[in-house]
Length: 416
Image 1: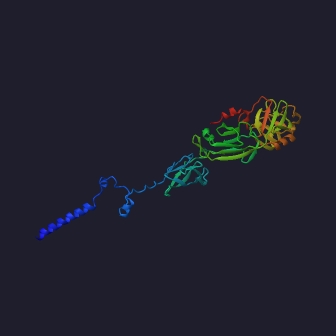
Image 2: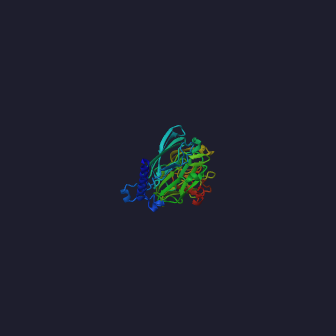
Image 3: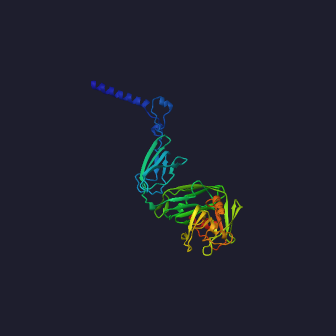
């Protein structure tokens, strides 16, 4: 009996429980089909205490920093321009430092400046690399969520001897005043084999702007001149940005160089050795007439356009200097060099009887002390001297003979 009641009571409880479950726990048809189980809950369901099942917001990806030189690299070429880029963010700080020894064994260290792109995603170094140096590149970048990433890269550059580097020398000297014919002169102590690579990195800026070109005389010397004489008052800046530039055959630019100069008034001396008279023109107007004597037979003065190269006082001249058989030792109080081979405009008081009459020198243009002193005081390096009346011409490269050929011929010697 007892067992019968227990069985009936258990059965009744099971029926009641089934009814409760059926009455308040059944899912709506739509949910039963699984079509909205991940939809966000409504505000009413939130009040009912049901959990919010909305998908989480996606997080910002981390910033990625990349440099064009790998960490731990060795023997990196000095013509490398270090570049850094950031993806999924922007660069906030880039620092490139170096230390090492130069070709003479002296300690060097410094910081290479660079330029950050307007969008902040790239940075490029403003100079190439120094040889035999250890570099450290430290970069910091951020994303929109203000997450920060920092990377440090170290590397070493190739070693170069002095014979593997070419040193530039620029002329005119900085802040000098020169004549209207003065070319820019760039010389190298080690020959340049890749002229085009070097020429691409040497720049001349003139104010007012004037068209011009570079022209190579040899593997160790290149000049620049405008199409016509510089305009008086022109300001010129020259930037030979060749540090680390490959000059070919395993040679690299040793350092960069800069200069700037101002062009003075127009001052042109025209020497006629048919008449033995020189006329000087300042800004187009004749300001002096000078009696002269030029080179005699066998020692003719060179005709052509030459420039004042140097001004010397009490210049000693001997026959040994030019290989003349006649023995002499003379001192010219005022002397203006116009060729490498030894032509000058100079004082010649020992030849007063020849001035304005005949050519009696060993190639120089002689004149009185008074006239040579005046010319000495009023001339600038780079003033043109135009000589006519002889059959002997000026050789290219014998002094500043840049104006003795046409601009078209001059430009043909450019490597670009």
